[in-house]
Length: 197
Ligand code: G4P
Image (cartoon, rainbow, N blue to C red; front, side, top):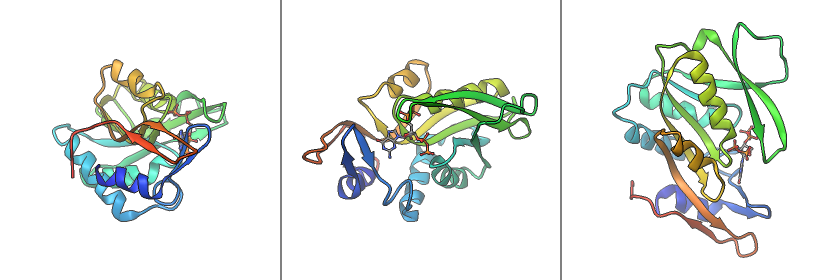
């Protein structure tokens, strides 16, 4: 078990409906030492990539993406969720549908901050159905930027997102992949992955 998996077992809470609460250390209260380790691990996994910017989506991706960007010594850009539509021209726009929240959001990034010279590492906290990542990939495509890879802290391996993104041919690195979880017993089953700590 890597240190992230161990932390998930210790402090994660499995809720009915296949929801994993990790708000005590990842996406509400954040353990900064853990964020630093996560940043270092993504740097190690994408060390050979000529990353110019880290791209994420608000809200929970931002904190993690900061630590990754710090490791690469590049800026972090986050897509904003927006209801406003009066932005075409100045903004790259993508539609993101949330299966969990059953709603659609437009996500936007200013054209000032991404262009065809950029090589992007896309980072997020969770990967479930992959809609957020597909929205970010679409924004990268609109900018003509190169997606060098995608890094996820926790992938829910029993939802389709991971397969969809890997089938598109991208290098997708998930630090922990949950293949099953049981709300009654609290059991979490991780996919076997190469050791990294
Ligand atoms: P997708 O982006 O992979 O398609 O995910 P989906 O629509 O299913 O999930 C919607 C939101 O719920 C996303 O955050 C996602 O990160 C989060 N999520 C999905 N499964 C879990 C889970 O088991 N536990 C937790 N804690 N979160 C989960 P969001 O609402 O779009 O963003 P944010 O503002 O919370 O960052």
